[in-house]
Length: 84
Image (cartoon, rainbow, N blue to C red; front, side, top):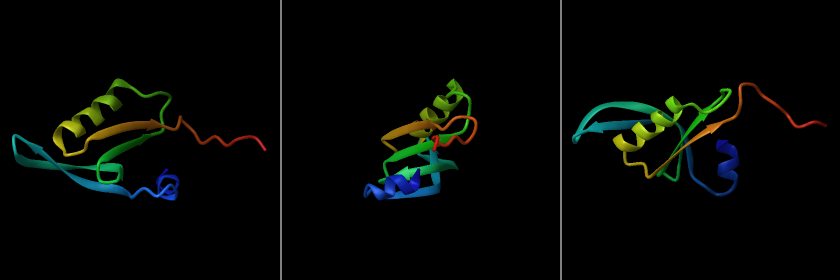
């Protein structure tokens, strides 16, 4: 995913340690799977489907950080390649 985004000219960083604040105080960090243009957090999943827990994870990250946008991207439970 990072490679595909970079090939479109976007700045992408992976496994970024992001500070988490509560009421103006640093309370910890989380690792964002990908950060795009220093504004968008992408959480990459390999699950049967996106669950409410996945959405809640990104929602909490958005509230506790300066990210403007967060996405959960699910690639399914296993690798699949197109026929041919």
